[in-house]
Length: 292
Ligand code: EPU
Image (cartoon, rainbow, N blue to C red; front, top):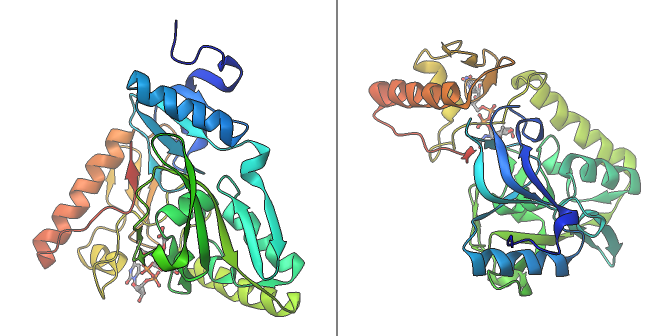
């Protein structure tokens, strides 16, 4: 008997992950699981633990490079309706972890809820954005989060509130793999004013980032007080190519990938970039990109 007996309706075998990542690269997930309720997710988590099957969570694949050989074990995708919810009451917006962040920002503009506009142009799901405290020069997720709903390794659900959460640069103190949802502080405002700010941020990004190509956002974290993009640029790496992967001309902290590029090409290019920056500045760039 397999570990997922009775859960067949939510499990796909050898599901290709490339179309589910922004890079469009990589192999398949051995077990691709789409729970439709927290209870089903609890069951999956418990069984994985019992049977010692590894478990990963896929968000929007916006900051992810999947190995050419794919991944063993379970990849959970929170596509079920309950994980897409967005409910507003008393200045708080309660959102499911599977909800798409860029669309959520636009939804807030439409409804006249201010607070999330600093996240304009940040790709990913709510869960993924909370997990890595996604953000940029205009603000980050941590600055608007009121609470986060998580599931522990036993499948138990609990809520962590602002006073116990710590958000750092692209990091949080949430250790649980599974984020089920988050509550954001928002306030009612004039939709036109919110839209103006969203547009300004969008124009900044469009002018400085290669948004028209498949990519995974910034590859490296910014070293304290510095810009990884500027360091890579000054190390002369713009345009440097390995196989189908190359450093973007518009912003050197972006790697672009031609169709058919292999994950191994991207990884080799990452090493080349690190070496070039280390040789010039004696600085080791830390990955922001998640690699499976
Ligand atoms: N710069 C260069 N050459 C380049 C790229 C940048 O000289 O090739 C210079 C720019 O001219 C600017 C400075 O470096 O003076 C900073 O560049 P930018 O304003 O583009 O910001 P960044 O620090 O490179 C951060 C986030 C981005 C976010 C932007 C805007 C990180 C690693 N990156 O980029 O986030 O979109 O601010 O808010 O924190 C991401 O995390 O995936 C991401 C794209």
